[in-house]
Image (tube, rainbow, N blue to C red; front, top):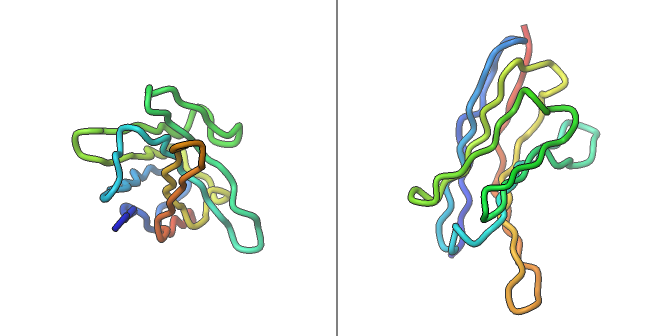
Length: 119
């Protein structure tokens, strides 16, 4: 059974920092591209950051220079270090695992963790 379990969300003041974690089980973690998405109320889910199996990273323009995605294949865990947080970063953050297997796309989602940036 595949599970992606996020943790680390919470309430933080503007300018503060948080680190999100996503622990994966039931998949060959090192072979997946891992990503963080977020969804604010009334908005579509949007891609925040990705890290490939080869450790290449990419970021949405809105978070470049403030967020850092990383992975620890020994722990089957992906992280999102968020700094200089803004109220507009408030959203539910979702972990995603994605790869192509035998020509078919395989993707899994976590249940999400709430991040609220407010004074």
